[in-house]
Amino acid sequence: MKRLILIGTLVSAFAMPTLADVAPAEKNMEGAYWKHKASQFRTLPNPKDEICFLGDSITDGCEWRELTGIERVTNRGIGGDTSWGLMARIDEVTEGDVSKIFLMIGTNDLAWGGKTVPEVKVQVSKLLDTIKRQSPETTVYIQSVLPVIDGRVDKFINANIEPMNVELKKIAKEKGLTFIDLAPFFKDENGQLKKNYTEDGLHLTGEAYYQWLSLIRGYLQ
Image (tube, rainbow, N blue to C red):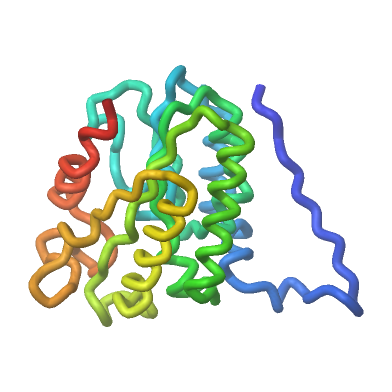
């Protein structure tokens, strides 16, 4: 039985912010969907030499095991998740025999999470340090955040995403990790997410996931 993590917060009316003051990026774990998915992940078995896709709804939206044809592939994406949410549940991933992690995170932190690019960079760096400490043999691939169609989904704009990808690439270099720059292959001539890759300007079609697979296939071996 996997261990259950009880997260408690001591709040002082004089020294600490109230729950209402906490930024959405930290509050995303309060939602029912996040709790349900995180609970499921803690009860599922960890396959040997697990290949884990970790992230938010962009990761969550794919049937990765079927797409890749690899039985030990797992999907640990949760729609709406942030780098703060990943930190709260990363032990579920690292306690297993995880060989590789394909990480994509940051879009929600910037769009509605109340965070700046520098703040997200610090949190992603902390997340990567935690993975390294808890599971030192795991290979982590940092994937760029994907473009969107500006104006289609509230607050999701490429003006935020592009600087985030610059910082993610820097993090990968600093920590000696592989950065997989997916974004250029998803952009049209105007720098927007290709229309045939999305229905809502943010989430991906099957064709887009197949393109994604074609770009990472060599890292799955």
